[in-house]
Image (cartoon, rainbow, N blue to C red; front, side, top):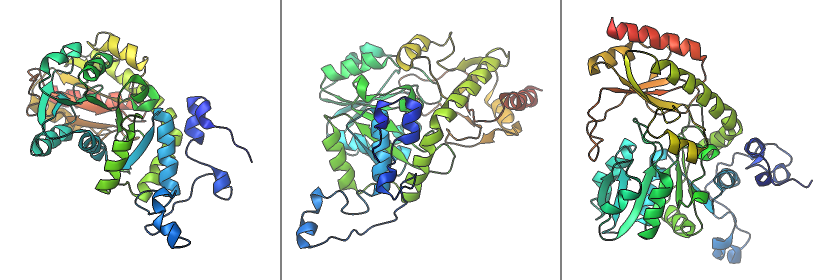
Length: 390
């Protein structure tokens, strides 16, 4: 039967219908899970012409890979998408696709720690020049450009301290310098912000977080603009990277509920952020959706007033008190990652991760607000505050 084009419909309809075509799979709603390496060809001519085949080997494409990449490409409004085994791989792949020896790579000072580690330990060894910049530098980033500027990397908002960069100003400066731009957009997802239509070359997602949504998958995606898509596709193929079959299936399933989950994460997190803001034992809450946050106006302009479930707060106390607070939590788990159904807390390590803008304020606790009842989460935090300051 003839089917409508989901890309022409509202976002909620897209999430329910992108990446599936029952007509191709005997009427089954979801695409089949094909665990495959070898693809058989009808004859030698077909085998020799496999480069133009839709399916030539399990590493490069299967119906399931195609289903998820097609869905993400549509959500991102991009030229194409590749899948990788983790969020970190989604960071490293486009950098390696775009950078050349001697290039200057500019990275925000509040970037995801493993991105910084990759830059310091691997990119410098490959001959790239790394410059960390104040995430609030905006158009003044031009003053840091030296020699050939290869990449301007962005993260919005930044890890742990959640500064909101002026994305258009950074992108304009990078374009003038002939640099490639890439944004780790995991916090917002393409449901809140679409990097590629806004002039960014690569949109990076740790699908482990909101795409998967259930703390049971490791996966990443990179969506690209038309001008860089051939280079990304080539590098992805040459590095032999691909996400696993089960992970792709779980991520495709997670997309179906992502809109509902993200809205609930946003609502719960804002309620708890506002509650924390009123406490005397909290020095400040680090959330761009709060009206007094330094990045609020930029967040509202670029993200349309939408947020997700991850934010932080600065404790009005010592690191020892922060540790006591965390150790007293009963509903919140102590763990890394985020974007799942469960609430998590972690103490941010801001010492070695800030060089351009050293952190001199109090200890920061990062909260991932899950899908629990907010009142239960606030009660848990309240008893943990009392244990820390009692």
